[in-house]
Image 1 (tube, rainbow, N blue to C red):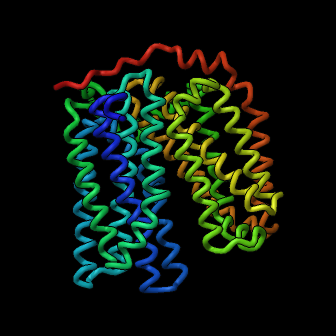
Image 2 (cartoon, rainbow, N blue to C red):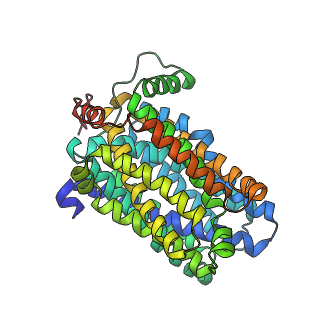
Image 3 (spheres, one colour):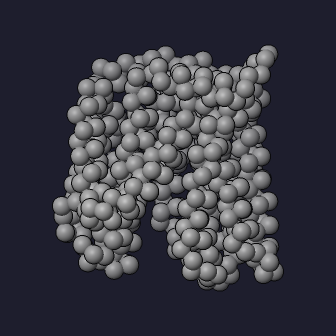
Length: 415
């Protein structure tokens, strides 16, 4: 279906992305299981979280520079093969009982660093793969495939494979990255941002150039700041959701998992129908409604003792999150000059990761000091303030004008 509607090149890119999501999802499930089978030290176990988010803070901005300097397709293929080698080595070490937590975390750090650069390059490649008018549909399909694989399929598959053999989830991940490398390698043409500059500038100067351009775009600047701010409140909420589910809603482990399933189902639905829904209600009202949903989620988590109400709020949030990502990614891809696509995209990823890190730290601190519902009340107040402060920024005329801007000159792939 994707191949018929969006072209063969997109079909390859979508398949590569979806397979990678399955593999990385199974490894994400298996990694803490492996650590827990060796130690119950909370510090060692929690170090896995740092391995997950540190690469986004350390390498997102340099990764954007790489994506703008090099042929993006070749960069993606190279990263995939590096990840294949690292994961294959880990799987073999596990088979011969020579692995350990240090090796696991080192490999995951390499893999996650690769993901930072790969995702930046992939977002920059998309406008050259599909027509500009179909960016919303393409982003929806990419998001939907990732949601299904990571949030619905990878969990059971990763757990099942780990029971059979600890090495299997990581071997599967290596295999999916190998398939991704082959599929991305089959994309016809070259995907450079433009001709190489005569004089190479420093990484800092190139990062600053991308930041200055983004800061000068009122709509994209506002969206980027909101992503960081709302990620703080969302991650703070999720960090203590298990306590809310068990202590306030009276749910067990199955019920707690069902809450995330509600959010995942909403995300898949939002991704699949996203382009049509956005066209029907306009990007302006997609964003505005999403901000109201954000406030409603925090209010439901703070005030309700009903698992049904909370589950519905998480479902609505999952759909909003998918739609928001489609609008933000598509708008950024429409407006950003090709030569800056990697750096502008990586700046957004860096801000998002920073918000996640701050939220993860604050959630537990606020809940411990002021009570289990305190992070949700804080999130509600912040969301209401965001709605009041940005409602006029996302007026129909402003957003329509952004969509009507002529496309930045994109160099066609060279056969």
